[in-house]
Every structure is written in structure tokens, then in C-alpha cells.
Image (cartoon, rainbow, N blue to C red; front, side, top):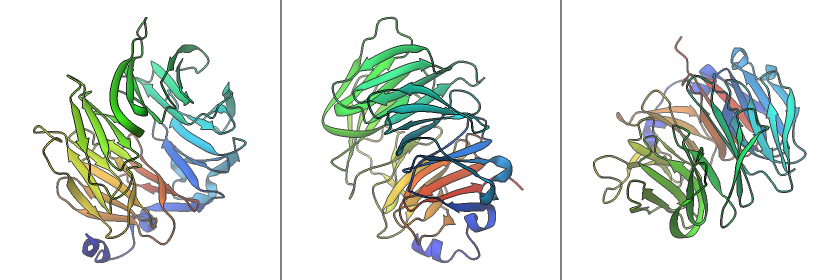
Length: 355
């Protein structure tokens, strides 16, 4: 893998087709609007940076404004074609429209640490979810009508909707909880496994739910029968994971290679993970999966970003290291952009559209 990167002639993809901007404070997250026309970066200083598609190659044109009084802990595309939602340690959930205008949705008593949304393919029906302490609150797409508040046994560490928006799951201490979004009577499906669960992902086909754990391993449940699945062997905690578009692979950080667990042919139980390249001795910190092609992106602890073809095992260097760890990474829904940010405040967008 290192030979592949070192032998790559010429400038990186970022140098050829991207732009980079240095921000104050480290980048805590990035998201891309559902219409793929705008990227939002959020920082530990409370700033939101909006980059319009027309300006992806001109970082000086990106709009920067302070939105939270303190660190922004979560960002997600709104449950609409445009705009974003941000949650902060100032106990607020805010909406940022495409034109940069900001409105309050929640002023609470606890940090809002996790935000996620679901929207149907036509951009009509949508749901907003956010986690504060032990509670996950669901709201309608407008953000002002509370649908329900779901109580959990301990602080929620991650939330995710299934692909159809019918179920929502939350990770927490000693396992995960799954709920039906539209149920008239809320009955939890507990998925139990002792230990500290720190992140969550759900299979695109709804076949499995996986959590990352404090103990540097993954735990999964087959949703058809609750069968437990354990995936271990990591040298460090898995801070980031994502299923490929068809659910064939679960791609994770936590090693100096891109680790991919097979969710086909009876896997992952009894099957070793595949590796899609990496940087020897440098930990992978963030992963993202392309929405259209069998391509994954990975960010590393030295600020490097690579893209890898899951089938052909080809590696494309997007950005080579020289800074601090990649802390945020996202593909646009149409697959035409890759955005990433780092702990030392670098925010970048790479244009992947055909030319």
C-alpha cells in the first residue's frame, strides 16, 4: 500500500480538484446537504462554514459564521433538500438554511451531542432525531412538533435511522435499543451486550445492527433472530464505521489499514476482515462509503486521506499527511464531492464530478 501511494506520480486529488481552508479550532464534523449543493463544516469554536457547489474550488468564498456559544458536537443534513442541523454544548439545536440564516429549534438543559435525520427519496416526509443525555427526541421534519421522547438506561452515544426511516436505534452502556418511529405505543427492542458501546451503524438492508465498543472491538446483532456477532482484533478504538452502499462490507477505522468486514456469504462470523490499503504505522481515524460506486474514503491520524476501490484494491491518494488527524469525512449524496476536516482546523472539499 505504501508503495502505491509513494509511487503515485503528480499532484494529489486535493491539489488538482479541491480547495482547503484553515479554520480556528478543530473540525468536529462535516455534512453535505441532501441536494448535494452545499457542504457544512463545524468546529470546536462554534463556527459553521458553508461551501456552495459553485465555490468548491474557491475556499476564500466559503461563508464562516459563529452559530453556537461553545463547541458544536454534531451536524447533520436537514430533513429537507437543503440546510443543516447543529447541536452544541450550549444546550441548543439550531437550523441553518442554505442562505446562512440561523434559527433555534431547541434550547435545552443538556448538551445536544448527536443529531441525525431521515428523509424519503422525494424530499417530502422526514424525521429529525437528536440525543441529549439519556433521551432521544423525535420531531417532525419542520423541527417544531415533538413526535416522541425515547428514554434509555444510560447516556446515548450514537443514533441511527434504518434506510426506510421506520426504525431508530441508539447505542449506550451495555448495548443498544431499537424503536419503531411511527409506533403508537413505544416498545423498545433491547439488544444487550455488556460494556461501553460508543457508536452505531445499521445495515442498509436492515439485516444487522453494529456498535463500536470502548474495548477496541465491534459487536453486532443479526436482527432476524438477535444472534450476536463479535468482531475484534483492533489495535485502537473504532471511532468511525460505515456500510458500503449495498451492505456487502462494513468499513471501519481503528487500524493502520482500512478494515472491511464481509456481510455476505454467512459473514462476518467465522470470516476474517479484508483490508483495503492503508499507511503503515498511521491509524485510520475516519471512513466514509461512496453512495454510487464501490469506493471507500479513509482519513488518517497524520491528516492523509485515501480513496480505495473495494473490489480492485486500487488506491488513490486524495491528500497526503503533514498535519493532525482527520476528524470528519463525508461523501455528497450524489457522489460528486468528498469533504473532510482535521483536528488542526483544515477544511477541504474535493470535486469528484466528471469533467
